[in-house]
Length: 313
Image 1 (cartoon, rainbow, N blue to C red):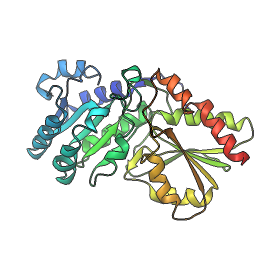
Image 2: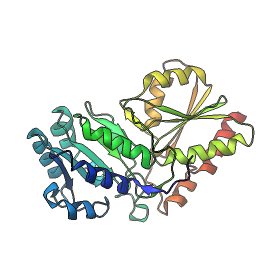
Image 3: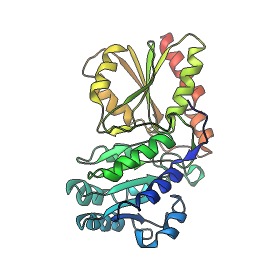
Image 4: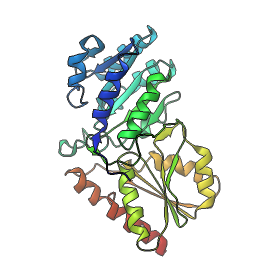
């Protein structure tokens, strides 16, 4: 884990897209009354000719973006994940994915980012929904370096994709030289006693838990699954045979998130036992992110406790 300045994904994305305008004349940003939440105010002020403001109309935004993509433009649609992956899902499925239009869908303020705004604004089902749609790639970066590398890939990829990001400044996991590869998971800490697979903001907490476990003689492997779809089934198959216990950790409902994706691979071998850590199948409590993560055992302390309990069985 590195100690460089922490940046939000929004800050990194806005800077990456700003630089891309110099080399991609077709790059456009589509917002849904969300330029402030997306950290795009400076971008839109600097590039009014690259900005399409649709207002609170996610369905229209996705369809308009698909139309622009058919005309050769490269639109990035920004809207809160709770709405982009819910209100506009038919347009995402038909206009974007089924027609394979070059639209990048950026679900901002994902997971529990909106905290006190409650369940209407929590996005704990978006990965389940989007990863079930054919032709749609799904990603969840963990820090500034992975975010920048991911968006540099998206800027050159012709395939539709959904990316979920949060609001907070991200703890650094990687370094500036990080290279993003779609469809590839990454082992970021080698271990032999148990395998911890995580994604997004939860990955740093998982690494913290692994370091705490090491002080107690438990050597945990930590794997980053930022590429949720395409999925690195080859690596998951190896892990499913190598480890007796696997734990997935995610800021998502326990149903059909990365835990379910991993479960499909683990089940092929009947060897490893899988524990899925996430939000339970009920409306989430309200509170700060840190309070909520602690309540559900998703902070480093909770992950550490779960691993210890598993290994005591």
